[in-house]
Length: 151
Image (tube, rainbow, N blue to C red; front, side, top):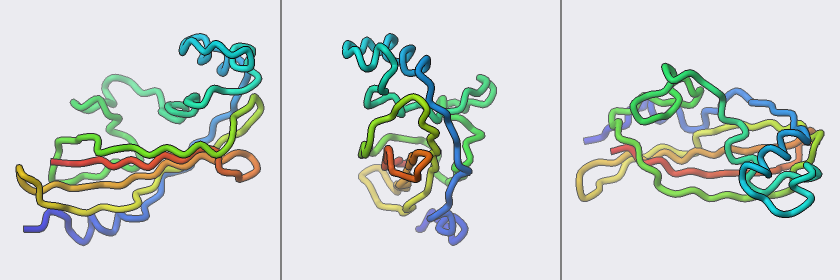
């Protein structure tokens, strides 16, 4: 029995609308204090700590916009799949360059793959999503590849 239809498979390659964020010294300082960074370059906001970008592109939404699983129901790459329980299947992060005040970053999400597999408890659906961030010069800053498992 196949769970993924031809319509589901057409989602492979789907790209989100670009999200844009301007980096300022104040935000770097606040993040550095909140995450107890000790290096002066972070505390003065001269450079962002490595994981500064991690949730930088997560939109602020109301509680009403969150599903039972706590995920944003209005996310542009949300896909209606026949299996609803979501599990993390792994994350790979590549950091290509540092982030500085004045940088103008653009983040784009993409569905890289969508496939199913039989597990011990039945069929599973795997979604491979990639989130890429570039700067105002179109240089790669950050790339995150996530495997999301639906059961």
